[in-house]
Amino acid sequence: MEARARRDGVVHFLQKPLTFMNMSGEAVDLFRVQLGLAPEQLLIVCDDLDLPLGTIRIRRGGGHGGQKGLRSVLEFLGTQQVARMRLGIGPKTGDAVDFVLAPFTDEEQAAAAETFSRAADALIELMGASLDQVMNRYNQ
Image (cartoon, rainbow, N blue to C red; front, side, top):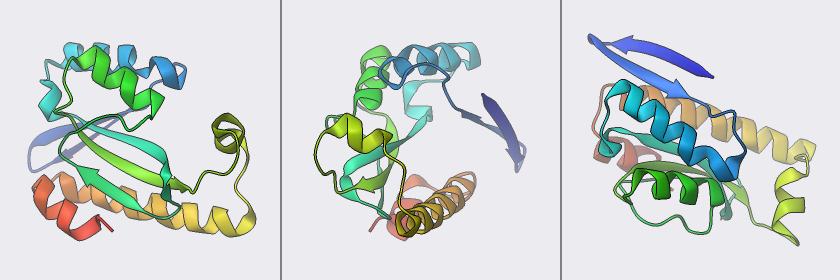
């Protein structure tokens, strides 16, 4: 799934791989190659069970922190120097698979919706601001 936006003459792409999460690196790398982008030109958005629900963390690079989709992306790209926006869905309780697949409660759904709205705002800001500016504004 893909969307495009143009701002100040620059085209920005948003891709949602339709593969299994653990295999998303292949889809991201294929998309990157098709567009002729360097890994440093990407921003990976993913959930993070180790961050409290509602938390947004934007970083310039680093490890996968156990997130299997992010691990796949970093392995296919061959570098950890890829910006990422992690959206907190935790704290995890019990088995990680069961936790991730369980629906949000009504209260959690409201918090998740607010987080997704703020994340969308951050993505829009990234189209016209530096990563550092957006990190300073949205990191909690």
